[in-house]
Image 1: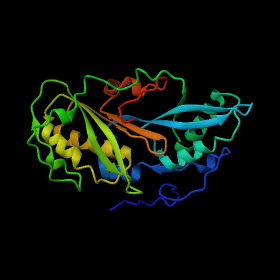
Image 2 (image 1 turned 90 degrees about the horizontal axis):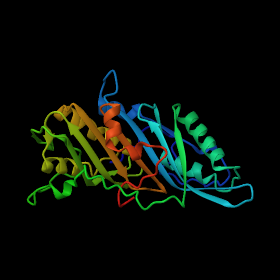
Image 3 (image 1 turned 180 degrees about the vertical axis):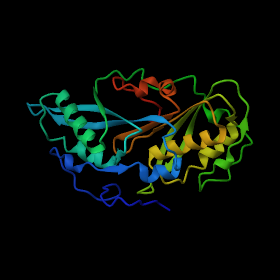
Image 4 (image 1 turned 60 degrees about the vertical axis):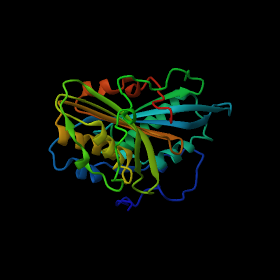
Amino acid sequence: MVAQGENNDRVLGKKVENKFVYDPSLLRKEARLDNRKNIIGSRFSMPFFGMDIWHCYEVSWLDPCGKPQNFILKICYPASSEYIVESKSLKLYLNSLNQTMFVSPMSVLKVVRDDLTKLLECHVVVSAFPLSYNMSNLLLSDSRYPLLENLISKEVTINEFEKENPGLLDRKPSNEPFFVHSTSLRSRCKVTGQPDWGDLFIYMKGGDVPTFDSLYKYIISLRNECHFHEEIVETVYMRLLETFHPRDLGVFACYTRRGGIDINPMRASDISVLNLLSLRLLSPDQLSLRTIRQ
């Protein structure tokens, strides 16, 4: 069943007329707390640090001579923000730039940054990358994260697909840092019910870690969960935290793009761990293609 929430102002899942002249009123936001309280409970403080990194691949406006300027935008804002931007509203908003003239890319960045800062009530960083940007070395090939699907036993059998089940997680002792990457992440949009596909990256240190087979089973149990991307990452983070109590923990997901936008939530036990996960993804000055599907 798709969780509909109580935000009647959403444009996600609705037929909406496109506008091609700048219109910041198209932007919508979602309150994190409405869903986060079901994930982290009644804690007095948030048990993680984090960032949400968005890449917008279909961004275009006109220069003063009427020539289209085509760029990729990278948008970063903290997981501590009270709100997230609704993804479809961001697409509609960016489309409204298409027939609008701007003096320079910097002027566009300022407009987008100011609009998102006002909407989300937090610090937002926006960067622009021309389509001539050198993409040759941007595929994520971090050897620290071995592929989970190559580590599971051939005999592993999956029986649970419908509901997220942390009871599937088994433990094993470990004195080494635990890095792993899975290509099997699938969840569903909480509004439309459509499938969302992505890659999941996990880092743990200090304490027991999950067995490969049990972690794989757990990830598969997320396949029918209806949540936003940010909530899926926070759910995985909290399950690992509460089950294994590691000293250091980091989880991030690179979801494939939808509507020309991909969303990459990152959560970690402290700032140093957050930086350890993927500096390139965190850096507003660098563009990164994280996985082959992106």
